[in-house]
Image (cartoon, rainbow, N blue to C red; front, side, top):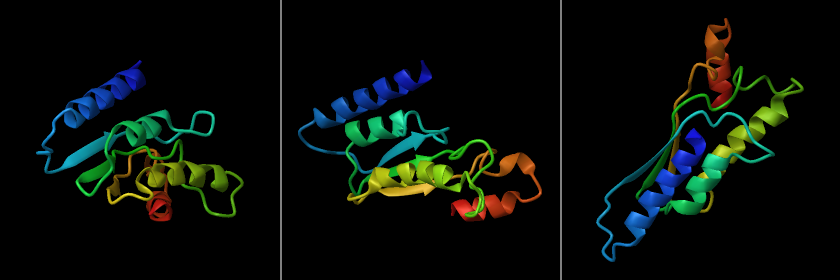
Amino acid sequence: MRKYFLIFLLFFFYKTASSQSNDSIQARIILIGDAGKLNFGRQPVVDAARDLVPLDKKTTVLFLGDNLYKTGLPQDFMPQYKAAKAVLDSQIEIAKGTKSKVIFIPGNHDWTDGSPHHLDNVKREE
């Protein structure tokens, strides 16, 4: 339900912004949290933001944490590495071919919930 509300909210802001003939927006920030899991190979909220919000030089996409579930980005020799990297790649690609910026803030799952190697996990995501 929360996902659909966010998609509606993004659509509403897009329609409101696009209906104005004179673009007075100085900066646009898209906040996306908990995007750390793909659904059928896609992240619906990321797709909706890409489709509904202008991604130009005024736009910054801010991922608010939990960019990967459940234990951050594993080491590249681990079997689950490719699947986890695909999730991050899908998030990064929101700005591909645009002048918008993407910023990631690590969440508790990115930090591996305080495991002894939490800093290593965040550095791998970097």
